[in-house]
Length: 397
Ligand SMILES: Cc1ncc(COP(=O)(O)O)c(C=O)c1O
Image (cartoon, rainbow, N blue to C red):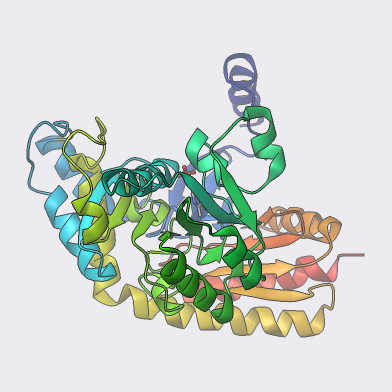
């Protein structure tokens, strides 16, 4: 197996664009909350493909539905009707209260569409609003529009000039109000900042966002790609915060691993958009929609309640660990989206120590250990993860 792994790495080193600093493990298969490497060693997966494998790996319902769909019809393009897209739209609009859906293939595409639709709204109204306001620590994606609203200067600098975006601190309502002049098309927020270090927006700041949208007229875009679709035990965390977005971007969990993104729109924004304003070849094809329906079925059939219970168990266990190990200075997040704050070197060692013991977690924003287990994770798996974390924490210097 070691030779097989070396060959896989050598082929990549020779032929792939080197944009990823990969962790040196090769995964060959998955089952539920576990991944197995090429030597068939199991790893409890609390990364879940960055919040994507929402139903766990090799989920039998998803596998059966995809096999059936692959035998029936995979793709037709958006030139024609098919039976599944409207149904996924019906379910998502019912869950969110936003009445219109548009399907794409990834998170960044969903954010791109939101930015375009916000611009289109103001263009239709004859008001030249083109600027966006985003938050410090935000991550909205890597294509040019979404990158413009992503805060990390190191990601943006080599690609400038980008869109005109003003970044404000998520703790500073006055700065938000000051930034939202009459040229602002939209404010974009993650209800829980994910890549930035698992920072939920505070209620006072969420209220300030609502106030500023009302007074300035700016639209609100909620990026629910990481924190939405059940991750917190609620359909969408923006609703938990009392936010009323005009546009919502979705991705990750929706396809359980099959690429699909979605944009949900208010009627006033949808009314500003005409046929031909936006489109995609693949978006919302039958295979992706079938996957989304399996995921949405699971959420409707007790999945959300299960995330609430599992999230409470994980949080209680993490709190107990924080009492024993003061290296953990903060526990943030909600439901099954959790971050442990600690010095960056300790975070790096904890991630390595957990992996050597068979638990996958990852580090984000330098000093935050992030957990995004499958939404189907069991109590026994949560306890196993907590046990491994305790062992790994005990060995930190
Ligand atoms: C909140 C948020 N928005 C957008 C994206 C970009 O999604 P994708 O990587 O599917 O393009 C991510 C990815 O991590 C995300 O967490």
